[in-house]
Length: 431
Ligand SMILES: [Zn+2]
Image (cartoon, rainbow, N blue to C red):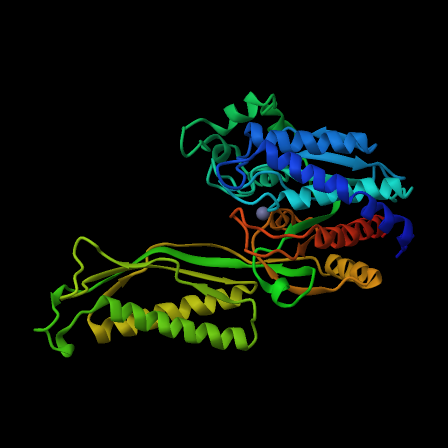
C-alpha cells in the first residue's frame, strides 16, 4: 500500500480547519431553530447546507455535482477517472432542534479531506468523492436513510410514492421537485451508486454515546452497526383488584409481572455483555400503568411497556427473543396474567468491512492518533454496506450524545478525524 507524504497532507488539513469551522457556523446560521438546528431533508435548510458545501468545494478546486436525489458530491479527480471511486460523507439533514454536528461533521470532513489532498498536491489513483446525503434522519417523512437508499437503488417506487410529510401530507416527490430536482431521473439512473462504481464508503460521524469521553480517546473505529429487535407496544393484562382485600395467591398484578420479566431480561443482558457480546444493549424506554384506571389502592390490572434489544450479532438478538418468549410464558402462568408483546420490528446487524477498518486503524497508528474499536448505531454507511459496497465508520469524540443541541465535539478532535480520513481515502485509492 502506498503511503501518502504525511507532512504536506497533515499541514494542509491543519490549515483548512478555520474553513471547516466557518462552514459549521454558516450552516448553523442557515438552519437555526428556537433551540439547536432544524434541517429537514429537502427543505431550504438542508438545501442551504448542501449549497454551502458545494460552494466551498468549488473554491477549493474540486468538481461538484448533485444527483437526481439531491445528494451532493465534491470530487477530486484521480489518475484513472473511470476507476471505481472512494466515497466519504454523511447526512446533511438533522432531527428537529438537534445538534449541528450530527451528520454535518461527516459531510464537512470529506470535503475538507479532499481539499487538503489537493492542496498537498496529491493526485489519487482513482477519483475521491465527498458526499452529502439527504434524509438520513427524515424528520418529515419518518423513514430513515431515504437519500442513501435511493442512491443505491434500495427503495422501490411504491414505497417512495407513498412517502408523505407526517405533518402536512405533502409528497416527497413534490418537495424534491420544489428544489428543482428531476425526480423521474432517479428511476432512470438507478442505482446511482453501486459496487461497480464505488470501491469504498467511509463515514465520519460524531459518537452518539459517551465511550470516547470515558476512554479519553479522540477517535473510534466502528466494528459493526448494531441491529435491533423492538417491541414498541407490549402490554401485560391482569385484573384490577382491591389492594388490601386481595391475598397474594389471588392477585393478577401486572406491574410485578412486568418487573420480574424485565429483571430476568436485564440479568440475561448482563450475562451476554460480560460474556461473548459486549455490543449487546437492552432498553425499556416506555413503562406505564393506565392513568385512567390506576390508583394507590388498586392492584394494577394493565401495564404497557416497550422492549428494545440491540447487538452486532443476530445470534444475540435471537437469544433475547427466545428468552423473552420463555420468561413471558412462565411468568404469565405463575402470576395469572397475560402478555401480549405485539409485533416485533427490527433490523439485522450490519458488519463493516474489515480491510477498511484496518486501513483506518493503520492511518491512525501512523499519524499517532489514538483510536479504539467499538460497535456503533445505524448510519448511512449501513445502507452502502448492504448494497455490497465495502463500508466503514470513523467516530469522533463528542459529549452529551446527539439529537439534541448540546453536542460537544471539539475542533481538535474533528481535525484528528479528518487527518485519518484524508490519509485513508488516499491510501484506499491506491489499492
Ligand atoms: Zn447522524
